[in-house]
Length: 294
Image (cartoon, rainbow, N blue to C red; front, side, top):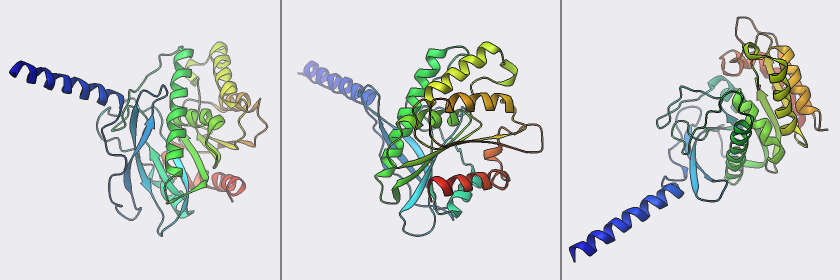
């Protein structure tokens, strides 16, 4: 009898492990009460895996203007922070940018990518030169971004027909790639400092490959996009920025705009994150929003 009982227990534990491998065991939805003047609260966003084998959850920090809403929504995607933890809090909070959007009546959802911080799933790092690997990872990010958008569009505090996608650095690449399949209701895409080949690694072959990637992800998009760089960008010179932009827009009739903004100092890659950033990029972004989401 004891042997039978032990077998049943082991079978149960095995089944439970399989179940956990295939679906998230974490609470879905809002998991904290609003905090502070920015009405900040934490959400867990369910994302069904691409092969339909289960569901993971991504952590998102949501900020809302005062009032009941509903509000238009800006979804922000971070870059490739290699030192970010895999299983602990990852506090990506571009406060100045968040306040800028809140002041204009937007709610903000900062989504933490798969495998970063407390977001479930595996974080993939693509080796240099692995074109197929990069495309696979970008497709995964596109899936996660658009799944997150659809989830928030179903929430009562969001105006589902007025969503903006915004990404920084590798997150900029991701939202540009997501634009082709973005859910209905996404009005426009803003990419800060996207790129595929850095100044130090520049070669004609690398540039050709980077342009091919941007051309592929831009082909057929119907969403207006705004690309924003600093003139003193550390990784992507104005020449590279114009090459990427030209490739992305070459096979689309959508409204596209490239802004290369003056900035003092040696490295402007973090323009979006800086406290003084909105003073520099704010007028360009405000003009874009007025056109695509009046």
